[in-house]
Image 1 (cartoon, rainbow, N blue to C red):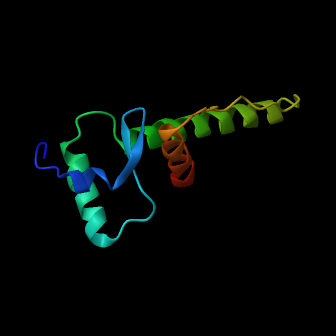
Image 2 (cartoon, helix red, strand yellow; image 1 turned 90 degrees about the vertical axis):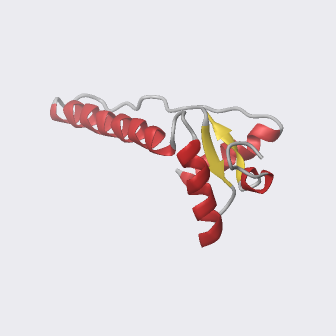
Length: 100
């Protein structure tokens, strides 16, 4: 037990990506409450930080494509993120993709 977090609480997470804890599958209401409780103790980056970065990147790309279209220039797409994971971390990568 660390900071009121039991081992069973850590079992609710598949791992982390960049310090963001990723829950396993779809939690029950009770599990979701424990996940929230653990995340409130977390002092690092949170899921909403990743979501904000992704939203800003999407909006910037959409604006860039709009300008290219207005200028009748050929559309091109910027590269995204490529993640490679082996072993335990691969489950966290898959979960991050599923969570969006």
